[in-house]
Length: 113
Length: 114
Image 1 (cartoon, rainbow over the protein chains, first blue to last red):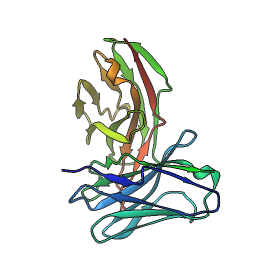
Image 2 (cartoon, rainbow over the protein chains, first blue to last red; image 1 turned 90 degrees about the vertical axis):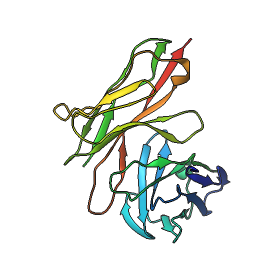
Image 3 (tube, rainbow over the protein chains, first blue to last red; image 1 turned 180 degrees about the horizontal axis):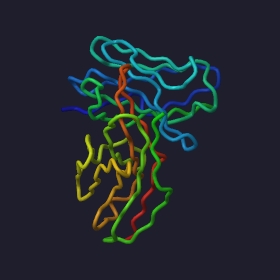
Image 4 (cartoon, rainbow over the protein chains, first blue to last red; image 1 turned 90 degrees about the horizontal axis):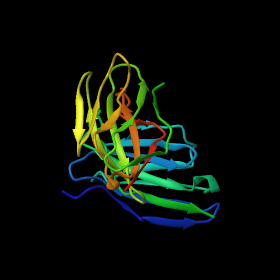
């Protein structure tokens, strides 16, 4: 069974731009979560989607948003990029998000110049 | 709120040495506990997990036991290899009515010398 895939793997943007990252979960998984990883803040939860609905949200500004499609694929969008948004963005999928194991993708490395 | 505390790194060991990485947690209810490993340039891989008190998770020679009385989930390996060099994250998952999320520790970098 294929693992979680994320595209693109690397991205370079400038301040003020917006960006969209994509995540395809493991087949049959319905819950998709997003995390931001930075050297200073570590791994922080962004949000979780299940059945096309945002079910859980972390403490990030409204510039960070996401959505999930009927095939469980998910996208996250960051608008008005800031230098501090440079990070590795990780997507994780699980069967139904009820405490079962989350499996991570390789991440998208975003650099904001 | 929920939190995970793990020992500061880096931890540097010689090959075949014994490894312990400490992890303690604070959570309401009965969380599931996980260890993930991250190799350079990659995402997180699940190493092992435990879902209830006294459970022992194990994989690839690594072990961790869910200790509710001490709120701990320390990672151990009897004989490390150079290929074990990576960053190790302890995490917990505490269910809420509004869904699930992982709370991570800060990570411990392990370097194993030949």
